[in-house]
Image (cartoon, rainbow, N blue to C red; front, side, top):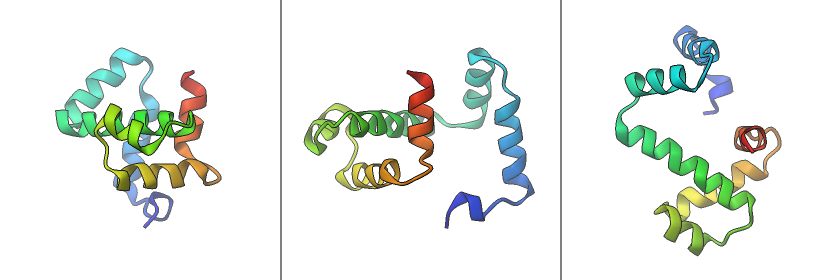
Length: 95
């Protein structure tokens, strides 16, 4: 299921909360409260995998650098190559 297909009010509330954050400090405080350390590490790892995939690194190099599984790398690669990729949007904005 795609998140675009699943947007009950509680998910919309989360999106509104994220969009209300005004700076890095607020973002850090909110994510620190919302997520466990392992969840934050997972999010960070996925974003780094996306950057490395987009930059053309090999699966082996990405696995060594990030510790991500080949299955995760493949999934992220497929998402980056799809139209409307959230990874691509964010990576372009943070560079």
